[in-house]
Length: 116
Length: 113
Image 1 (tube, rainbow over the protein chains, first blue to last red):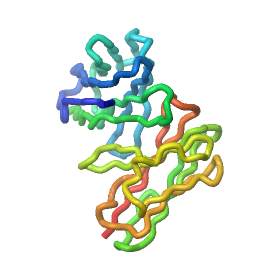
Image 2: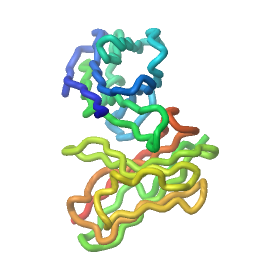
Image 3: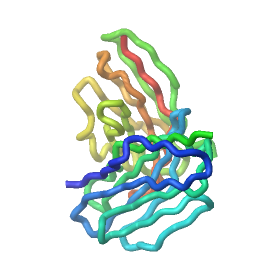
Image 4: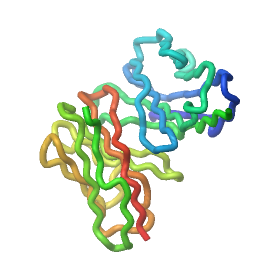
């Protein structure tokens, strides 16, 4: 079975703190894709990153970084020096390669509140 | 690029009425998805089209729900008759090809009273 677990329901930090959002996935497939999406209070879903299962290099984009570890089936997301504008619900998602379906399996999301 | 466009943004309807949600995907994208978001069930895929053909509709909750994609630039999700438990935010998303990132519209917030 394919599953994405985001154990942290809510996280509250003070501005400028670093914060890591955890994501653990389950799949028996060897080829798959992992994603992070951001849902700000306005409600839209914003794509942040896509990773394939063969690329375990960590990625950094400004204050955002992602740590993909196949050994622990984790794809964690770190925000450095958090800002109030980072307040949102963050979703991790899994997509399998090939097959008859192309569905994104979402985790339940982590609500991040950054206090000024 | 205008992004995925959904209409209406908000819909309030009475139980038993027909509701039609509309979506215009990003031009050139081959895959289109309808998702529903509720507090209880989170984000769940209802149906997905590839090149205008429905590929997987296993997430459609029941026969009251139907979706069409008559051409590459338009899709509808219809609920008939609507029920209060259908109240949710419905998202449409599109992607260039399979397994690439999906871009979401702003969603339609449906309230059935």
